[in-house]
Length: 517
Image (cartoon, rainbow, N blue to C red; front, side):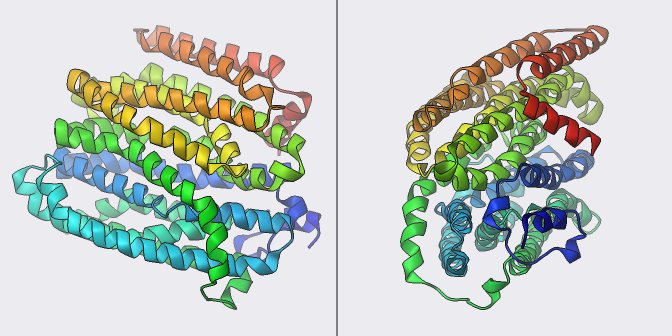
């Protein structure tokens, strides 16, 4: 297939897309990466509108305690999406490398071996989770006595979905390596919507947590089957060879072993805060924390969409074209900053008013400070996603894994101490402290792996520090008229400054092209 045909195919209807992998020459094409980032972002952001409508309905109908338990279930589902011993990320990297080297015949063996391994991991994880459910409900989590029975049954349902969640992560990794984000988006949108809409659809029949969790498991099962269909469509050779190949195990685990640590420890640090709140404070406090968390962390969808596209591109260019890698790194960071700064500033400035209008004065009082702190944390963490992707794309997952191992005990101690003294605000501050240290160290390691990339240790810290200063000022401003004037002025000044002094002519041309297309 020629390059032009591959690019044109991205604009055709889904049913008419070509079923052959993109050639290596187009895998890092700027136009292709930009379009895939847009598709990835659409798939990630679409469920937000549904969440905005569904969360108040769930709160009003089920109560704060049940909403807190559902939030824990969402956290468990999200966590086990990463609990695959690093194989999904390893699969993405290795498939991208083989595409770059034009060794297409080796891909099916790599994919099927990884999926079989991940299926086994998922089954073992499900058994362990199933056995731990009674202890989890009775001991660590402060579940009200009247809700313990249905919570136990609900968590049993969630444990049964773990193998499907793990295998689906591997299938999604295949689509990402093939740069088939349009296919992945066609699945992600209904899957994400059903995550929030599914519980609401069960309300006319029951207010129990059990059918709600059963609905979520059903949705994940359908999504897994859809991902398998999409992989068959994108890579037809998978249909011809469905077998376990022992020779593929070594490469997968050599990369995946360290990814295992990151995939266990990293998401654990992300989700542990809500379990700590549930055990140390109350499940109602989980709701006060989780609702702003669920909204604010959606900001990470912007860098997530871009990094999901750039990771296979980094894996392809890390050896063959370092100049291209540096360009992609710098441009990606600037675009993330431009996209997130105004959104984050508006969220921080108007968090109390928005929460009061949405969920009432009590939620605004409890959750607004949490939302502001987490918004700053997500912004910093988003800027650190490019160094993270570069380090792993360069074949050094051991660096991120060791960093997470060092961070974990420090973070847990800080989390416990700050939760005891400041409640859910302290939990949010501990989260901010962790991601700040993490992003700074990742930037340093990224520079050490590619010392020509001075941007990561010079310009990136200045951008982050300047943005945080503006966000901090915004958090202390009172009065709606002053807030409006400040937010507009700050956005205009920062955007104009970025345009004139930060973007290169090449990047300006890309922005103009994207706006006029």
